[in-house]
Image (cartoon, rainbow, N blue to C red; front, side, top):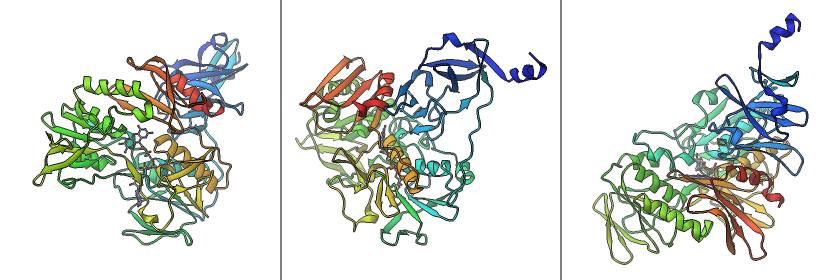
Length: 510
Ligand SMILES: Cc1cc2nc3c(=O)[nH]c(=O)nc-3n(C[C@H](O)[C@H](O)[C@H](O)COP(=O)(O)OP(=O)(O)OC[C@H]3O[C@@H](n4cnc5c(N)ncnc54)[C@H](O)[C@@H]3O)c2cc1C
Ligand code: FES
């Protein structure tokens, strides 16, 4: 070995013998404290960061999965972000960044990994003189901003949204932020403030009040109108409000934004009695957070079981037992008739006339697309706006996320999931730049209640029956939602991250 080679090898770490690597599998290794994963394909070995750039999941617990096009993706176990097993390039969010790749050398049957990640080539700058406006600053909007810069868009990006908080992880609101005893707790920011400056993303704290789709004029509540070259509409949903006597009393809340959580959290203590109206995902996640904070929680639900419609009777039963075991009082098959109090809520009256004390009421009764600025424009039956397969809605105007009504096998779907919103945003922005856009993958979402996580994959449709592999009671199962012809329409699972990783890539091929 000459002196030059020796110096070079000092930057490499011998991590294991090539013979220890299984072909087509992910193997964890480390360099000092740094966790890495190796992926072997035939004689070739690639090394990647061992932690997902989204929230740090251990990539070794994910899978390497071959797509129907023959390429291999590394899929994150927690929220199903996927990355190219060749380059680490981001393929599917909710990660917003690629998986860092490290150089690998094979030497005398040993695998050597370089200490410094391989630098990615900056894309050639394009369209310096164009302006893109993004209406909204949530899941889809941030994924769009990241994608535009990742692809080399060099023009202006206006990110328009009314919330002054740095764009944040909305899914954390009802899982972590509300459970935090600090009433000023904020959900995790999707990007730090410096990122917006470094990437020249102009945050416009304002609300869009109208859009002229012919002239592409975006009218703002406070600022001057803008007429960008392209527009991405990503205004999401707003929480459906209650239409009941007393629903405007102080202490009655919906849960959609960081501001909503601050308002709720400010009046929660161990002596607070909370009534949650509705047993959907947000209501039940909120119930779990509030129990963690010691508040008394009663859920009033029109249905007998939570999530029965989406997840079936057996899992609905377990979810209800889970909550009841944590001290939640569940009042099934019932609705609230009035909310009572002078200025502030004091109780609710149920339809059978009984009254429950309430210091706080949280309405978790669903959401509707936030599209007031397009009131003159026809909506799809699902309340969204119809887009084509590139998420295009009108010339140079695209839509992504909760407001977008997409076609899948001849049916329209409006999906309210974080990951899908970001995937749609990537499709839309790539199409906007004239780049080839991928097809929309099967919707996936998760819910976390106490220490239980359920994942769901599929295009929502009524099912005939549920086949459960495993044990729903111990939250170790995969449920297949099957139609009359025996076709699996969707999957739900708990404690089966690898199985769901694989399904996230291959489900549509079945
Ligand atoms: C509490 C909570 C928990 C959730 N948990 C999960 C989960 O666990 N898993 C999951 O898959 N999904 C979850 N969801 C759903 C998920 O957050 C949404 O599907 C996703 O955020 C949709 O992305 P979006 O970009 O369409 O809209 P959003 O992320 O809602 O962003 C919309 C943006 O548009 C802005 N806006 C609205 N109107 C205007 C206007 N007129 N002008 C300008 N800006 C406007 C809003 O202020 C916001 O910034 C949760 C939702 C909530 C509320
Ligand atoms: S931690 Fe990997 S996708 Fe969330």
